[in-house]
Amino acid sequence: MTTAALTALTLSSLPILAQDKPHNWQGAYAGVSIGLSSGSSVVNLGGTPAHTSLDDSRSVGVFAGYNFHLHNNIVLGAEISHRSEQSTLTVGPGIALGASTMVQARVGYAMDNWLLYGVVGSSRADMAGHAIPGSFTTKGIVYGIGADYAVSDHFILGAKFTREEPDFAFGGTTAFDSKRDSLELRASYQF
Image (cartoon, rainbow, N blue to C red; front, side, top):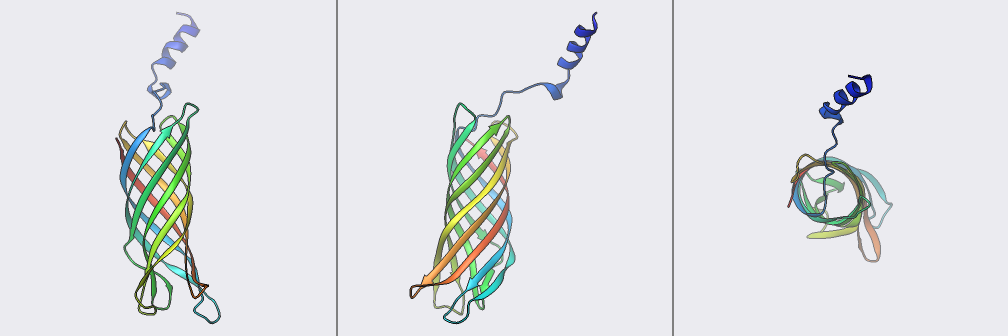
């Protein structure tokens, strides 16, 4: 046997070097997430604006979406998610920023079994507490980055970092302007 033939036979037998068919990200998916959140807030209740840190918080969530896998490995999609905080984020004296629902557009690039993506969209978060009458819904933008790995044709693991910027205004003035950063670990099923 020649050296070239022996080298070719050895390299072709190594499973690490074998190329599997890249994952097809086209289709619907749904899953669950766990995460950590923190951030900051500016509270303006008619006096001097107060800057405060948001307490660290744990979250659990659910999400669902649909991806379009284009021929050039670009992946476009849309996702809706709901995240419930396990402990409240205090944005001011007696005020808490709680659960949030997000609608996001996704743009990503697929490489083998990996999908690297960015998101941008809209966020709605609950706000309540004894310092304000009733409960309110804050609205704002959400943006971030993420990475998913296809463990199999249907099972996906991933991580995503997002920043929500919910605010709330009454009397024509922005009373609460918050920034909430979240890091989530995600598991999903692709249909």
